[in-house]
Length: 460
Ligand code: TMP
Ligand code: ZN
Image (tube, rainbow, N blue to C red):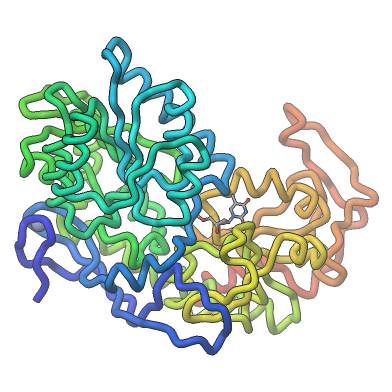
């Protein structure tokens, strides 16, 4: 029996993934010892909070150095610059405002406020990223956030006008204590907002790789509204964000406070999808199995035809996908990643080597599984040369999909070079929708990954 971390009611099982390693537990060597735990997703039928049934001890998850560094992505840089601008709007007209961020990471957002001379404080328990934030000119308190820390901050700096947290609260197991801390720290007219991956997006897309040890909570408007009320707050606004595969920003103010129309809009949407009961997850759990089976089958078929497949982005997310689907180095030769903390290591559980981008560019593999699918736009732009040369990215949510370059010919699987030599280009509308006819049309290719994807689907 398992009880909800928020309201103590008995929870209901949604899906069990079996034994999983620590998502960010990259190994120095493939035979290093590893810790495994049972990964299960549950729903509280009373307060609607979707959460993990059990989580490993924090010291097993967040070791000496936290592998996730926010600033590795240009899109995230842009996102947090906008967030800082939104905060400036919230504090406009306030005298000497004070902004506190819970989990400031490397200061990706607060550096903008620091640059504008706004009084701020970042709370960050991970030493390596906290140091980086300090280098970025951010004032940091190296600590976890709870009522004791909140009281300490109030004594030292006074109460705050804005408290925010991005991709942080989903990892805070004692969320009630964190909310009590916010209650102590927030002033009478203050605003508390947080952003995390949105349950409705995860379920709609079938992106089950978002489920791993560090993500204890999967928030929805319903669960956040209930959580807020427990702590005398009102959920006053919801703003959808196009990051991390779909996130939601929840704004909370002291009760009573009027709700923005966006809240009723999103609550109605969640209701239509039955996200507060197990019924709403039937399609999702089916999609988990289907994706895992068809992806592995496709990779096995590519392997049979001796076609090299590598991965792009050694994400924490990929740990769930790879381990649940049983995909290892025999299917994905290596994963390329730009984080110095991951290069040269091996992925948790399945032990796929992580290599730098140089190795990927030198190899020019015909197929690349995009594990960092939430950074698709940025990565496609960065790897446009690879794509022009005929390299294909593969994504798997909501369905397996190959991304070839329109107007750049098709992939000749025998030599992996595109057959664009005698392309006849027909213009249809603007240049973005150029259509290319290849002459001569290749005879039936010995293998077409597109057909392969179709046949995998058919045989499911
Ligand atoms: P995230 O999905 O948790 O943000 O992790 C993204 C991972 O992908 C991270 O390990 C860094 C890696 N990555 C690259 O290797 N190249 C890139 O261009 C981007 C955007 C991310
Ligand atoms: Zn509950």
